[in-house]
Length: 152
Image (cartoon, rainbow, N blue to C red; front, side):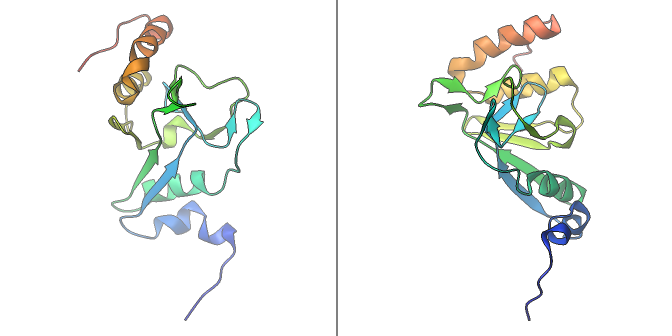
């Protein structure tokens, strides 16, 4: 038997959350040090549509035993740009708010952002950034928060 439903039902966070242990895996173009996620634009340039990312991020987080994962390569442009940045590029569209993010994953590890303060989020994200960009991210962190980054 096959049932067909409109996307307004299938992608609604409350519908997604009805599935126990729901795991959503989405991608991102850019993540700032607070955990804001840009997934549809590079600055003012539209790259893709929003899709159901925000719905599935929320729905899986609301699911009993569920989690949300945002996975991305740590760099872009053949390694010349960090995708973890001090702040969202001008014109960047935040698809997933920092309050909705559970896990950010790069090839350098996992940052669990749930329940963390903004400085704790920044520290966790710097740890999973590409090593070539960590020093610059730490400097930006110091400038913003006027305190050093923990190397834990």
